[in-house]
Length: 137
Length: 193
Image (tube, rainbow over all chains, first blue to last red; front, side, top):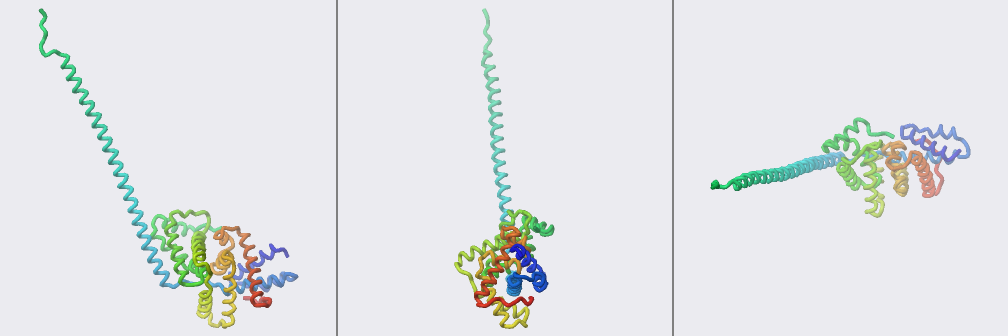
């Protein structure tokens, strides 16, 4: 029997064992031969390990207490996330306000420049008109 | 390879958006993670401490969790594995006594008909298991305590299913040799368990 076959066999046996069925005898009967002893020992070890390792439940008080702590942490996390979102909103609003103010200032400056230009144009035109009419002889 | 079930997938997505929904995932896995950590650390106090750390870390890292076709439990076991590895590094030793406490208490409460001799035999075997490399201990715990398939164990240990089968075979051979060496006699023929 090849090593890979033994590997498959012990794995199949353990799956059955975990499922609550011990087919050691059938497997050994089916694989009688020079490797019967080794296979038998491995199946025996698997059975011993199964008996030694069993699921263990945590204390109910521990489970309840940890859940309580986790939920408190989760709520704090929600608050942190909400706080962070609010900070982003405030930051965005602040930046928007600054951009708006700069825009208003720019428009104001342009408007003032235009207005002064118009005034200057009017004044310049008036300057070119003499105040007293020159009378020709 | 099993991906998270639809119900579980929904819970994970919900918990990502709203961490207060993490409670259901916690209840689903706390027993399994505790059991795993207990066998790896060997005492109740450290098992509780590390189990708590596993779930706090999971809660913190859940937003970055992505479904890569592996069960959610594989992700939790990896966190547990890393924390236990750090714990062993910090301890610089492996604890021995409390596992025996569990075996004695567990067997007394679950099956009073077990004889003292049988308890001693199991304590003896646990002692040998604890001498195995961490990966092999992990394999035995996931297989016999968590009832995980080879494929699922492979997902946790980052190995192929075939590699896990082979590792399990080698682990049984090592255990057999250790048992024979420590008892000084060959194992008795199997009589069914």
